[in-house]
Length: 69
Image 1 (cartoon, rainbow, N blue to C red):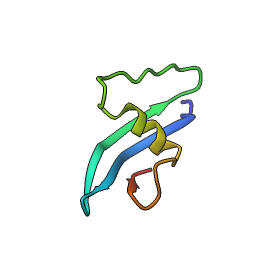
Image 2 (image 1 turned 135 degrees about the vertical axis):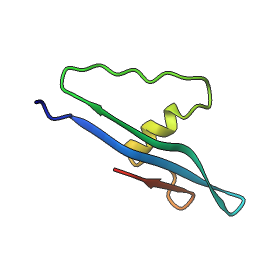
Image 3 (image 1 turned 180 degrees about the vertical axis):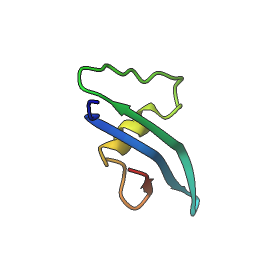
């Protein structure tokens, strides 16, 4: 069995809004194996960019919280 080149497990991303944490991506899990192509599709505002930024740990520090691995 081939090991994944990217494994995301229980990713949850939250942003601080008016002093409270509001989750925008909830409990997302997936694996990408070598030579596999994955497309992330969805409506505007569905969390595609936040998911990518969270995986790369590029969300704003202090106003965002990333959980999972």
